[in-house]
Length: 242
Image (cartoon, rainbow, N blue to C red; front, side):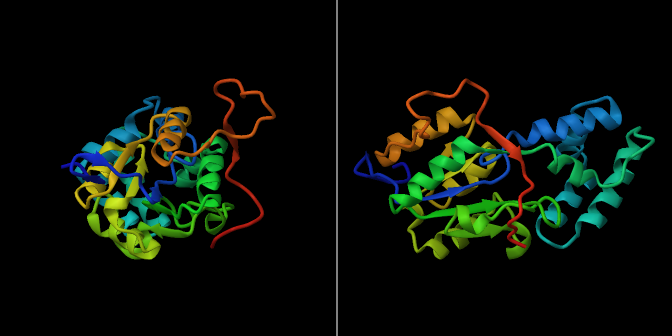
């Protein structure tokens, strides 16, 4: 029987867990690839090292779990980049990647509408950088915020999703998790949470509207914005969480 079902009949979810980077922002991998191309000529080098190079992957795990700060991660990852042919690794690599992200206004609007209709929302995010949400008031977006470096455990561990559900007071089987990475959803689904794989804001907002039976389309005065114009400004504002 699938999560969120009884006798094979799907029950509407009651709460939302959502990733931050890549769901409430523009594509994280676009930002990685832009910086990677700039420093190495290979747009996929950084991503490939973090996925396939053992020492690089372990550095990311330590950083996401809060055991290695941004400076330590950048210094040690620079060594991995140099070992793979990048002669000149610029300082502030993480910040450069963060600067390539834009808030996704369509997703933020949908989350706000869910909350206004009484649906509790949790952000569940793996940290990247000591202040990877700088300038963003996360507490104004969600009812609770679970960041991997704060709780010492990262997605796709079931424990981080359990923490979010407990903070919302929600049964995992009554929750839906939105993430742009399939393996993170696999972890959530092992706890009984329904997974929603985010590919673009149009499809995700439509699916959320179906699941919750709500109108989640942004108010555009009767006009739909042109495709590709739902990305907001860079993530630099006056209000900060930390």
